[in-house]
Length: 566
Image (cartoon, rainbow, N blue to C red; front, side, top):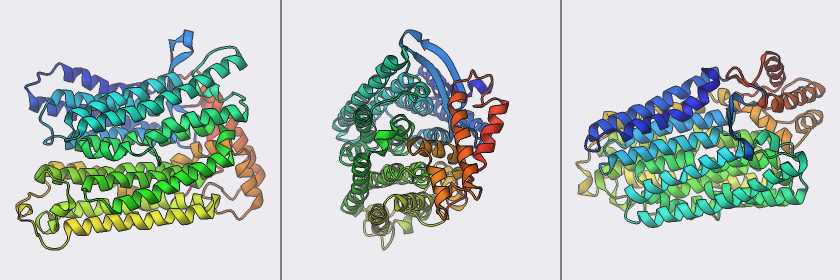
């Protein structure tokens, strides 16, 4: 069954959707129960990916391939590495959390509501496991449809405006990205004589710098709008404010990560020369830093609770893109981990807002104050989410931000100096929000009778709290998981990076070990040789390698151990 495990994970929410469609619309309790069972089952079937995944093995694992449209060179080709695994697990967990938090918050068109979330789950998983560009683009576009309806049907007063703005922005970026994909598609035919959308085949292209730069900017617009990076962020606050709670949770926790994932999976490996172009790197680093500072400053000015958290996402995702374009192991590994952290922390913050909105139906910060006296459990959960997002040591946010700042410092010290201001401002707007809403005396009599968190609401927060503490206290397993794909990306963009760093000596890089420079270089070359070959082998099992290749890959990877955050 291992060779079909990713297909099972992909199909699980779709199977739940098909059953849901046959349930009577009037049986709301049955619909709620089934939707939660289907979402929980989707998370459960993804768990075997964790313990069956071979940490340190090169290439992609659980690879499954089948002919789809041979005349176009399109295949059903799926597989995951350490980066994909973390994002798939984030998707399946947050899908269940979003479904559970909707239990009492939505009552109209219930069957259609849950159907949209299950369809959305299918699309998001498909994006993170696709190894064929045609398949990837289908899932990328599929995600737009259910999210449009979630905002446009179950959203707030300006839901139609927000839904249309979200759809048009992201669609425009997708069309430009498609032009870049087609450029690679036809370039492959001109160089090799056959058409293919397979990513491992497209990586063999020898493209002049000018073509790479053109394709890079086409990809950039598609991915930057999805992140969103400054100045393409204007659709995000409207979408967050008008979306229902579960929609905001999924949007922040998973959908935005599709953009950063695109940079890591496609822009850097497929277009290494353009990714190293100093003009491009400086522009993207500058946009990331502006986003970090701008998002934090605008958050300080907000009077709407939800809009404040929405703008904080612009700031936090700026850290993620800065880490990516630091183009070193610490920056990229920190970026991936911070994407997971942002999904956990910001997901909790939107859940907090949803809880209070169900009770008071207002998000105006001025309407609250002293809620810790009325809702003590709620105040404790909010404090935890706030400190997690602010990057308190021993919580998840600290590990990601610290590693990104270390990578940015290695790339350019000025980047790190400006980025640190985002950390300071982030703590400022989160602490000020908590002070205005939770502390002091209850000044509004409408808040005196508010009920505290019930058992179901506590259960919604529980897995996120546990995950945040785990990453903050013991991040080593996550860095171990990311070591292999991160080293492959860095070596693809900067050939000889690890050998050069070892030869210089004294480098403060968690991805380098104490073995000799020659041993490191040889191990790295072995891994680069094995990885692409493994991705194209016919797979009889769910792992990415056969016996000899797996042993060689694990041996090579063992020369680059990764520790936790320092």
